[in-house]
Image (cartoon, rainbow, N blue to C red):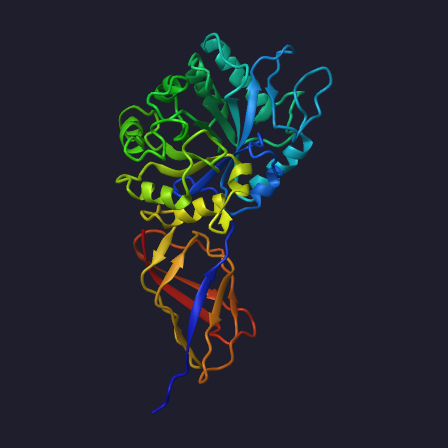
Amino acid sequence: MRLLHSLIFTLFISSVAAYSTSARNNVAVYWGQASAGSQQSLATYCESDDVDIIILSFLTTFFASDNLPEVNFAGACSDTFSGTTLLKCDQIASDISTCQSKGKKVLLSLGGAVGTYGFTDDSQASDFATTLWNIFGGGTSDYRPFGSSIVDGFDLDIENNNPTGYAAFVTQMRNLYSGGDYYISAAPQCPFPDASVGDALDNAWFDFVFIQFYNNNCGVNSPSTFNYGTDWMTWVSSTAQNSNVKLYVGVPGSSTAAGSGYVTPDSLGTLLSGISDKSSLGGVMIWDASQAFANEVDGTTFAAGIKSMLNNIGDSPTEATSTAATSRIAETSSQAAAIDTIIFSSTQAQNLFLVPSTSSDTAPTSTAVLTSTEAVPAAATTESLTVPTSAGAESPTSITLETTSTI
């Protein structure tokens, strides 16, 4: 009898975390106000796989004395355009490009808890949308704080209880987008409807809604009155202009980031796991980056804990996680290997590492490094992916992964 020498392989997948439209494990963080007392550069936070969306905070004044807007990033930018109060932020401009190169989305937030903003009517709001598109978006202006860098969209964190004009602002901004890959979001308080952006949410098209489930009695620290599955899901199904709008559960990044509403990632995971309908869940929004990365919970940053929790609450979306229920590696004349289960944590299989285990009766450990740019199948169907192994590795010259993927 001829014995076939077998090896057991473990598959690792290395990929760069990036925003995914249909995923439910996105993490959005506000950056710019250094609420923890200090903050790292924008690009530093974008180096983290625990962040997918960065919201620059804030554009605080709509119409300054020079009739230009004003932005404030808590000392991260101090130069101004000559004769104006508008900041000229060369480093932030460079960081935006860095973030976008890593697949992160960068939005500019209007408003905040303190600021001089608002519209007198729809016409003024529509004109202001054009102004912002020219200054921060894909238009042209002599005054561009971020130079040639273009933000991926705009966020409305309006908190002055004046809803005038924001639906018109969003409608005009979307006209200027002309079908491009740009986004509109809002950050309402969780009490429904929101006094500041409730009208806009009902009458304009939003991609994300970063609901502030803190500093309110409907927050994540009050499970009995947490209203994600009631008021907000009802709004999605009955009123929202975009039926595919994504809701983000907004939380403070530490106990000092808000007056109330802080919970640990584990506690938040328990709450989110109890949501019966996660079809509109886009992920978690955190106020803010400085708090989320300074706060350590069980030996890891709060941001990392949130990302890990989202990856494990179940009911994963098509583009976020694909689980291979069965898989096998084809035999060759020299050796055979088998894998019982593979979990793909990305839709792009890049830098796949096959590491054979060792025991007293097996060949010495070797590593076969596989690289493929093929998309990992994410539908509930059987697919196969054949990729070459690196030269010299003690493994078959080609390996076929046959997977039955379930979502």
